[in-house]
Length: 269
Image (tube, rainbow, N blue to C red):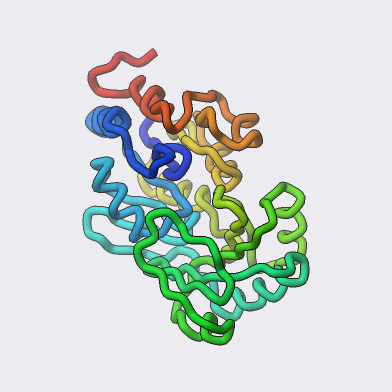
């Protein structure tokens, strides 16, 4: 029995153009009508999720910023579960710079992105970005922080993740969501699965009653925890390797094809 569907956004639920297809929106509607909680579980901040949830017809809770924020889509309220202190973010940036020369940094507050000098990555759909001219301005501009973004022209490989992870302070952790050249640093213990499992415990839902969809390494802990792990065909090789099932790609409505099994008007199989 499936009671919760955990849905990654970019590369999974969303097509490559950043939209939700009518087929996927319809499958989500049928699944939620059958009693399944559809929970967005994404690296994206609430301001982006708010727009996409409306397009997909989703309500309830969304796990944002890789687990650092829970966003209530109905009340438009956010709860920070994993703040990253500015001082800690600054120490992490210094550590990254020692192993990744030329890296540039941005701070995500949950409500806006603050980009420091040289930070060249612009997230698709970004709708609240501030640029500052110096590193000092970067660290003083934000009163809060939920993750540090590190960007460089170097490709993100497993070796680079290991190198950066080894250099970081023990009270931080690094992950990769798929954006070219970008690494995401959180406070230690912050992850999609930590927040999702806590919410499921509140709801009385076991891991065995969760189906999770994903495509990138930051989805791996959720996929390993869920009773049913589904990778889209375009997923990172490590994600496909641990999934119980590989569905069609994000552009071919892979999530919808699986969700239809639990839709209110489609028999389970």
